[in-house]
Length: 153
Image: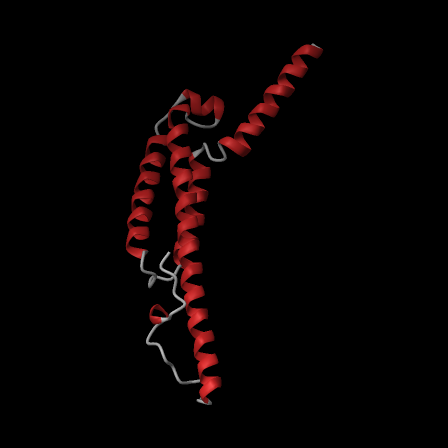
C-alpha cells in the first residue's frame, strides 16, 4: 500500500510538471482562454505599425484554427470523459497555443517599437524646439515613421 502511494505521488508530480512546463494548454477551454488573451492584446494594439498586415493575417488564421479545434472537441469521446481532454487533439491544441503565445509576443514587440519611435520623435522635437526657442506645439514630423530614431529592425 505504501509503495502504491509513492508511485501515485510520483505520477501526480510528473503530471503536474508536464501540465505546467511542457503542456500548459491541453484542453479546449484553456485554448479558449489563451485566444481571449490574444484577442485583448490584439484590441490594444495600434494598427499603424508597418508589420500589421502580416500580424493580422496570422491572427485570423489562428482564430480559424482554434475554432476548428473547438468544433472537433465537441464530438463525444470516452477519453474526454475519463481524462477531461481529447488525447487526439492534445497536440493540435498545444501547437495552436504555442503559436498564440508567439503572435502575442510579436504584437507586443511591434507595439513597443512603435511607442519607442513616437517617444524618440517627441524627444527630438522637444530638444530641437528648446535649441531654436520655438514653441513646443510646433511639429516637425508628419508622423513618428519619419523620425531618425525609428528602428527598422
